[in-house]
Length: 68
Image (cartoon, rainbow, N blue to C red; front, side):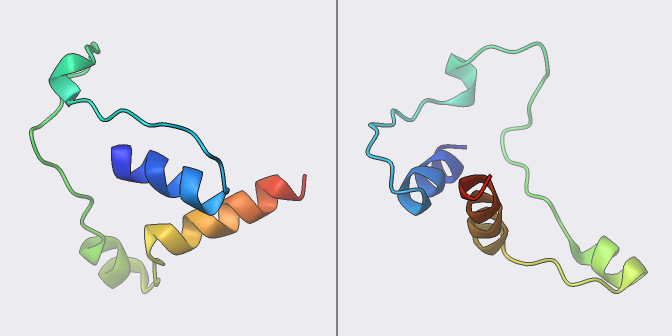
């Protein structure tokens, strides 16, 4: 999540100090695996869709938000 927040700040040109923390230091009711990555292979194969890299989608999303 730190990388995602960092990318938002960078792309939106926001000067804000981010402090990374470990998941164990941010208690939630949901149990989280130590390492989990979204595998897009099945949805790509089953539906024949191309899923852009998250940074490309984030940039598009921030562009839409900026124009609202």
